[in-house]
Length: 436
Image 1: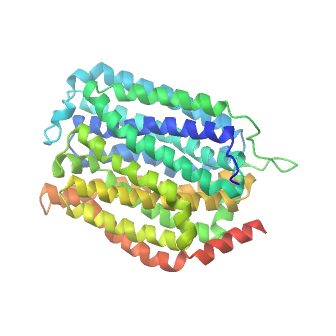
Image 2 (image 1 turned 180 degrees about the vertical axis):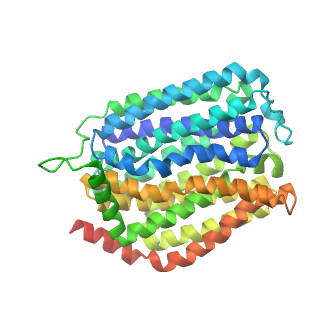
Image 3 (image 1 turned 45 degrees about the vertical axis):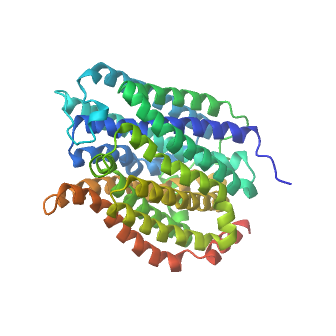
């Protein structure tokens, strides 16, 4: 008989799905707004740099905060902060939207930048950075909530359902909704995004139970001592250390391929805002399938073999994307790579939640994510450099293809590494060791 996941889980599930709906809307709105201001690939890629830079700067301190305070209150507070911040961004965009280029006129690559382009870009950079700081704290604490609301033997099932719901909201409903809202008014997607954070915060604060980690008796260690303990624990765990470093490279490659994706979609595939939203459905199609099948695939072929397959399939998907001009083929490749991305996440997140002690979970998780997410701003900068540099020796269209081809080549190298590093035997040994 399958154990029920409980009301706390479904509140956490609903909060995450709601906030991810807003993220899906924003995922269309922010890059499209940036492309209405400038056509410079480096300047556009800096939006993602600003969003991901906090993962490099604040992830480690966020782990100490997570292990020192009520995790429920921390997550709810960050949702409230993002509500206010996104509301402010929406207000600024609303005040200047009349001077922005028509969203449906951008596919040809002829955006008309407004006179206030510099100020608008500065606003986007600052807003993206502050949003990223809140995301670091909220996401790290959210992952530590899951072991407090479900039993350990339910973690893969609970995480799989959560990823599925998030993918539907983030990639299936959010992007086309964002495209529709953009067609109505540039500012509207930001106001909708703000409302989702308000709802998510209210749901999180309604969770019942104790969410403050137990502290050892005696004086509380210093921040530095707490931080070193988390770093030392992860670095001495060979499997998690290797997973963290490899995921960091994978996420950098994600940013390499995605930072200038809006230009690839507009100029290579020739899509408008509405069809861009439809293209983003591909993530949900693959992600939902991955969330339903991840635990089955992991059990059928082994968790280690599953991780190896993720690396191989991702390399192929990126290579095909970089070589095609068909948005149907891009849709299919994105669906496949989203499927394997969710497979990777369900296996590795559940593994961390199983084997890291609760009183260390926030800190060790933050160190892991420091490696995993801290590489994202580097990847975003590389994307702009690759495209801008590519234009110096080839045409614009070929330059926009280069990030996908570079990412595919590096993924092929990671696959070779993964054959030895990620075996089912090693993952099962790690779980057994934690249980003992």
